[in-house]
Image 1: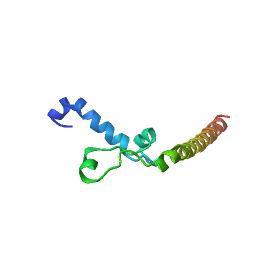
Image 2: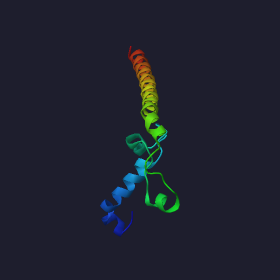
Image 3: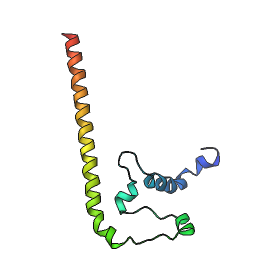
Image 4: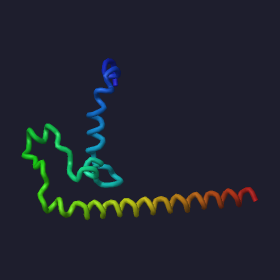
Length: 102
């Protein structure tokens, strides 16, 4: 940020927060906003250029909890696999170091 924008950074936080929370994250393959609210955010540009459905159809409402639980299970599984890989790597490093000092 340059000049006057440095002094006005606090006013930019809501826009930055919306941008970060509505962006699809590589790890979870969806936006944090979608995870929290079960829909993508509606921004003023959406209302101007498209006919946005503000209330999702009943079919979506009934399947969302199962889909969200499925995504959560995948995330937990990926994290468990990553943790296991890190633990194995740490153990290998410690074993290597202990052999070096023996």
